[in-house]
Image (cartoon, rainbow, N blue to C red; front, side, top):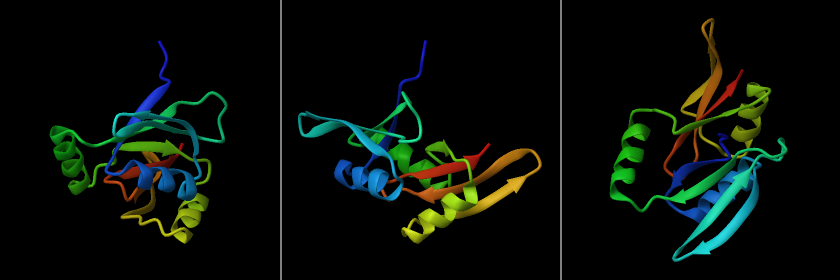
Length: 128
């Protein structure tokens, strides 16, 4: 059993695609029309054969409630590993990304930061 696909709920697929590619630096892998939406995935250019991230339209009322609730509580929807968290924080801040939590560390956890993906999610980056 392998993990090859994970998803993040987004309020607008086109806006999400621009953010995840133009701002974060992911690469579009799949873009297939599915009714009024798209099967739209991005991948990291830093990994060969990596997990695809599905930019999943948030049209389900239960999912919208869940997404809004964890956002309001400051809970990240997902997390991405980075090699140098300060570098990523600086790079993304220069691109206009908002970080409600700047890079922080503790003796018992990796250094982490949390940003707003502009699509309804807080996303954590961490340096293992």
